[in-house]
Length: 356
Image 1: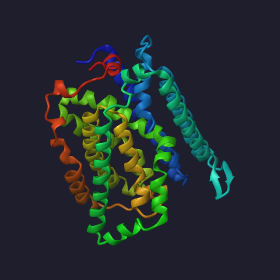
Image 2: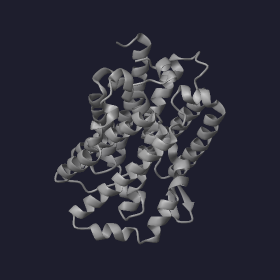
Image 3: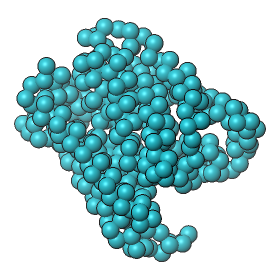
Image 4: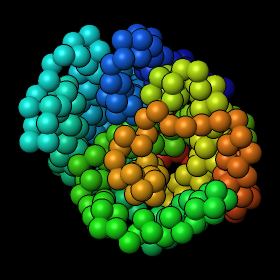
């Protein structure tokens, strides 16, 4: 089913997306033992799937004149710089910088600047690459109305899911009180700016999972089963973060289980949105919203809410129910009912770069 080139591309992708993730997971374990802040690992890890796709294309399609090589190379360079800073944040954790708000890790500041520069350079290279190259490798924006509809639908489901979770804990009034605070509206108001200066990380995941791997799995296993398998694959990819970042290692198995449930549920909706719009930027935006709105809906208004979370096995049934009812139900939608050969379409770039 796979040609020699296709197998090579897939091997490159897996080696980078999973290999680097798990290799640096060992460093995360070491850092957790030394009680080092591991926040940089999460940002860097999000970049690996797309870098895997890009290097697979760059190494196997060198003569392709329609490839946006400048964008791919700049993204790869940014990812490598982030990896270097992430490694050094554990090996040299005492490098600090004085900021108006206090002392901050110099590596965190460096990664923030690298990420912002990567976003700006990425936009520039995407624009100068031209519409033809963007379209050839699934990087163009299209189907505006459908795209906007999917984004607003996700927002509605996200807030509904959060409200139900609060109500189940008897805290629905607290949920509504969050939106009476100025901090909540400030964070909501700057979301567009935050996206422009931070989209590269979310693109890093979605270009790997949705653009590249989803069509491969759907071609092999079918529309529905392929997406379900991708959800598990995506969930297990978070393993180092689940054990050493989101929670303490003793809660890692619970977090991993919860992560897989979330990734399967979100993966179904993200797949639905991508298949419906054929626009990779829609799941990129959805992923950004999912990760950033929690800063508001948690009421903590800080990214610290992502670390050292409180989880238990008692949370699993609720996670299954909420993700299954609100997101999982979309696997019954029309895009998943169409014939495989009609629904799972590879754009020009992927059909050349990774014919499946």
